Length: 607
Image (tube, rainbow, N blue to C red; front, side, top):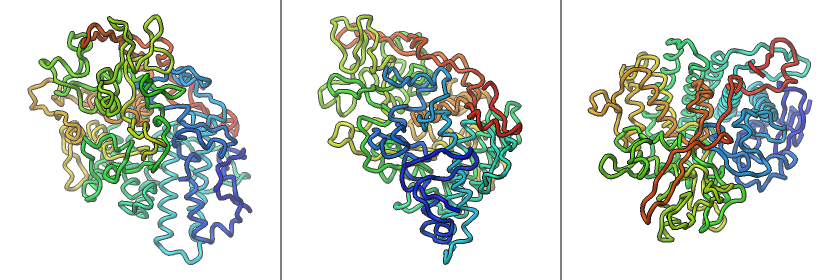
């Protein structure tokens, strides 16, 4: 029998979704699984860029080297946020970036990592088969040390859990295959429920943890750690207990998730390594990444000295002074902008005169600014960046001016509507913007975060709130006393935001009921993790994808009324950019051919 070690970036058609092997350079079964170095290479092929993980193809420069030149990656398809209520693409290119907002997830096979694509589904199963083959054959390796064996097993169990998690949040519950499948075996398998699959995923991460180091060496940074496995276990259980999977609000299931998240936080805080970075270094978790930022990232994909060609995922902005990428940038919605409260924690009210004239900094009487993360996440009219400051000005975004002066960062047509590629909402993405984009070569360090410590505090707050209440001490974790409210407040304290406390004189800062506090947790999650590609799947698991407040998008129409005065009017972004999701979009469509294997492997509802 011949197996394949994927050294090149190539994929060929496969027998079916359960029988996927990597296609490239052939080695015999004996050559791979009796040799440690080749066995490690076999499982490590899953880390290779642009093959199994949904990494960003930063600028499509290597497209011809893999997948027959048909794979473009996120540099073409953009942020997952664009299929949520956080932003949308207003560019008009050959690719209909907003087709997903209409629920059109039935992409051609060559879209690779496009949401819901058949090729992505198949590739994930291929990765799972690689994991199963590595686990099944580890005892055949000659002269292997226990440390070497642990490295392979820890990696294989962790990655199997990771790729099953990708299947879960995309397509729902699946048969949990733990051994290499032969083509002659029965492929008609019963799909587990969402929760059953989440629990199986959690078991894989629990199995992986003892094999892995608590902190990986710098040279192995992209590899999983014990902390990553423990945190991912909690994440899987939180997904399994969320409203989509747990409509009856089963308290026992919430407690299961809360215990897992609480134990993970306990391990992280006792490790002496993992910590939240200072607010001043918040953006370094994503761009211009340095060693300190790595202490918050529990599992991520680090790309050192990477050519970003004007920004990952189109985070740049159109500007007469700085030029612009041919495809433009994302328009950040007013929906997201309003999630950032005033700096005293009070929610914004867009109907007030203060918001209509000074929405970003306040009038100096009622408010003196917004949540500090607002300024690190969004670019807006009057914002300051090193690049525009060097030109002696601030960011200019307005649709219309009393003296007909055109804004540097917004071009409009004769109806004062933003031109293609410019923001249609008055905001650009800043969180992923790096000064390196204006330097020779555009090189910087980029991080794709799957789980960071802040996520873990959010997951625990969510589960503990439902399990025991916002202020109740946890049960079942000796020596661990963190409440749901205290967990959320750790993130707010890092952000220099006032904490939630029932003793607060401000009504908006009182913890209140379970439901009230859950709304605050969800808003905090949106603010903290904006543009980290988490919002779409949060909306799914919270059963909010079809909520009217989510589906209707808004922006700002900005008129310059004087040298230093403006009026800001909240307006609909337009039906073109509204989300049009239906109940069936809570899960992607499964490739029809796979549902023809038999009566047990059923299609997702509505497809």
